[in-house]
Image (cartoon, rainbow over all chains, first blue to last red):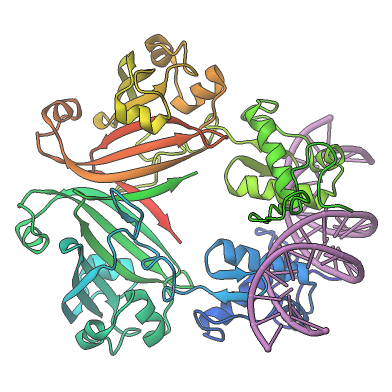
Length: 263
Length: 263
DNA sequence: GAGTGGTCTAGACCACCTT
DNA sequence: AGGTGGTCTAGACCACTCC
């Protein structure tokens, strides 16, 4: 059998017209399947939390052996885009109904298990539509002057304000995001983004520094000005690897720490 | 064919003698192969940087199909214990001759690529054998009062002292570690551990906080007392998941940041 | 050309969940 | 019982590396 797909198959061998096979342009079948699955995910054909079709069904749809779709799904599951559950099916990953309440939050209490603090108390301070500052526009791929949504909020654990966040979102995809929506909602903000705007935050990069609390941050976090804080700048991406959120957080670390696994 | 191995096969079905199959005790063949490969790695049968036998050879040795050893190797490669190179073979991961000079160091310069700073200038401040403090002993699984090696060092980038590290190692496995050895060596410290002591650091956990520089750290890092610093406490493990190193680092972050990928 | 890892297939069987 | 994902096999062929 040929290693390319019937209908939407990308070129799999060096272009016959050109004499310059600069890029080998070889992509395995399962990678093509993976790309097709990714398209279905980003098109919303299967929504977060829902099951995708079974492996045999997908194999039939793509005219491919089950082993090949298995390998495609394996990679998507390794990237946490899909979730396999033996005997039940394969499900689209979601930030809602997750056992860990905040999938991307790496702050843990110093003592006890990750959820020892109980649920976070959340307080939205503001939600405004502004012209994106230059650095924000750059990070989010906006044109300078484009409008963006800025959200300020504080998370408290056990009554102690611990995280102050400044969140920037591109204005167009997030049209209709209001303070009411944010205030009434409970559960992770990323779950709300999935429900209300069909935007799934799939991966993120964080840049961490140690900074001194300025007077404003110090007041909101109830610490002395100059207290060392973790500065966590997160850029979150959707399926298409499009940056969709810039989040600047200040974390108190007297009773918590940022945890990371290396390998 | 049965799903257990001829010679050293762990029980694969509920024990016939007991009526309490509390743990299903089912482990797939490829997991058993993986465990055998891990033993060979930790026994030093194949050393860091060296190739392991080919898939067909391993399949013959274990009386198993190539696909099964493939799956075992796949998982070890995903954990960064092995490195596959098409056409050449599968190699034992190493901290030496790695393209990235420090596999576990997540500190990046704010501008430019990760290696824009050039090689780090390293200075060993001290290397002593001491009785392990209680917290160190606990972390390393030592008895209180056991002897440990403490190393202090500073890393500088572009002439600017940036990292101050206090490293604790269990005394017995690291018998013979001296200041001379550390000073004369070039290349990552973990590579020296592999060569001299046959100990491979395979994964690590880091706990990060923001702290103020105390007078001593401030002097060694050439900053003002009270300057916010990243406190990075790393516990590094060998193959057997045995903690083998406790490393407490203070990072300056005026021109660098700690980078992390979330998914 | 020979050896290595990488892909793809087809079929059998197993473990888990639901009905 | 029937569906789902999970394991294992055997064989064919492909891409990459080295001689």
